[in-house]
Length: 128
Image (cartoon, rainbow, N blue to C red):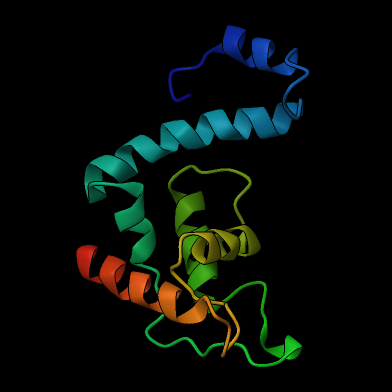
């Protein structure tokens, strides 16, 4: 996608199988281009993203404990914007952190919480 040009953008805008939003398509193309120097600098996007893992993260216990962003996701979003990424705010960054296991927002006592925590420790060691 980093090498896509105007013709590719128009092809995507005509594709009924995807969300045909010009701004989203252009942002995806720009983000793919912006990712290349990040990958070169850090070895992978994962290595870059794991730099934002919080030192401590409490497992949520009640509904009010769940958050949509954190200081780390704000820092990640700011750095991504500085590097030319588009349509990335702290909530999107936090969602990425959740999906990648950088933060473990499975409730305390959830049957998956421990497995995610173990995978987190393994990944953190790999990207340290």
